[in-house]
Structures are given as C-alpha cells and as structure tokens.
Image (cartoon, rainbow over all chains, first blue to last red; front, side, top):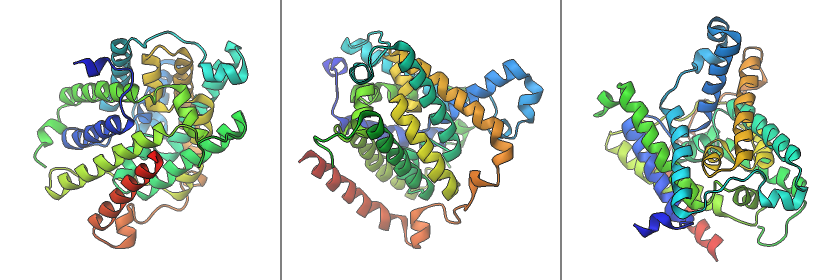
Length: 177
Length: 182
C-alpha cells in the first residue's frame, strides 16, 4: 500500500479516479458531483442563526436550496477529511498561513493574504451561485453530460481566472500556450 | 431505475456522500490541485495539472455515464441555465478563482492539508453565497437569468445521437492531453 503514501499521483490517474467517482454518484445518489451548493446551504444555516428561521424560509433562494445538511454537504466535509488523510499519509500535512508563491509575489503581510482570500471567496460564492455551479458541478459533472451552460461557465471560469492571474502576477512566459 | 430504494434513503445518501467525498478529497490532494501554487500555475499557464485532472475526469466520466445511461441504469441531470448566468457568473467566479487560488472543492481539501488561508477563503465563499441569496429575489428574471437555453445539451442543439458527440470529443480530449505532454 506504499502508493497511498506517495506525495503525488499522476494527474491522469487522479483525474480518471474522479471520473469513476462521478459514475458512482450518478448510480447511487442519482446526482452529479458538485461542491458549491453546500456552501450556500451553510450560508442558509447562518441566516437561520442570525435572522431566524421564518425570515430565512421566506427567502426565495433558500426555498430552492433549503439550509439542510444533504449528501453534497457531506461530500464537501468528506473532501476535507480525505485530503487530510492523503496529506497525513504522505507526510506533507503542515499548517500554513500564506502560500509561498503568494509570499514571493506580494510579501509576508498576513492581512493582505487573508483579505484577498476572503474577497476571492466572496466572488467565488457569488459567481458560482449565479452560474449555478463551480469547477466540479459545471467544470467536471456538467461538461461530461455535454451541458451547454456548463461548457460556457467552465470556459468563463478559466477566462476570468487567467485574465485576473495575469493582472495579479503580470505576464508569464515559460510554458504558456 | 434499479436503485431508487437507495436514492430515497436519507441516511444512506448522507453516508454515501461522505464516502465519495473522502475519496474525492484524497484524489484531489494526491493530484496536487489542493495547492495554491498548482491552481495559480494553471491560471498563469505554466502548470497544466488542473486541466489534466479535469479533462481526464471528464473523459472517463463521460464514457462511463453514457454507457450507464444506455443500459438505463442512470438519468442525466443537465443544469437548466441561461447564457447570462453562465457568462457573467462564470467570469465573476474566475476573478475569485485567481484571487483565492482555490475553488469550492479544492478549498475544502486545502483546509484539510492545513492551509489556513483556505479557511478564510471558505468563509468568503459562504459569505458570497449569502450575498447572492439576499439579492436573488430582485435579480431573478432580469440579468440573473436572461436568455434561457431552450436546449440543455450539445447533442440536442446539433440534433444528433449523444454518442455522435461523445466519441469524437473523447478522442479530441485524449489528443489534446497527448499534445500537452509533448
């Protein structure tokens, strides 16, 4: 079982494995794999906590996506656990506040990195709800069903990301298309 | 549908979700996409790990689910959406993707590997969803979802059998990945 302790697997093996997981999701859950809705449901739970059950239930969005723990919420929780297991097995688990690549470009200000992370997260949360999915729901599960909106959304995720990354980090040269 | 009994059982659904999630997170971490450097490397077009993982998942997934559908074992669930939602929502997501350096799935995995900036990012994703829910009623039917797609899938638009799209697309993706490796 040494392969479980390896630091990295081939992206093709890992990707193929994720493809197989999508078969299982269709078969046993009758749903495609997706991650972002779980965050919206969590938002609903917070809304219940602060604004009360009645006001939350009156919200049109939470009527469509009620604030409950569903299979997808468990999936995201599972991703957290599975990733921790993988990192612990390979010995790469470590606490880190600022990614080294970020620090090399923008310095060691913790506040700056946390602010960027929260703002980036807000845009991802808002954008994925607007688009109706994220890199997994649209980018993998939607595209494999040949869904038109998913292909457009997935391409836009990368257009938006590539343009923003080039503004943040400046033009990159080596290995680019 | 042979497995409707399982589909209706909430406890089994939650357990299966957790098991699939653990496997998903394990694979994401092993592939490297839970690393900020790998995602930013993809968006800067210097490291193509993210595209390799996603496209191999799409090829393997696509072939499998189409066979399962032909065997009448599963149903598809294409997202009903609009051009404005996919375009504008997608671009907003992209900007956040570059700022945070993780997406909703990988951010959970990054927290699991001990990355605390991802925890701030996950908090942001929840916050952004709350923001969306609070403007949803006013935006519904306007820019939020203009130009609904009448046909949900590519084969429906092209008026062809789905295999007519699946097989060439699978070949194209494999060739593209082979070209990336050159």
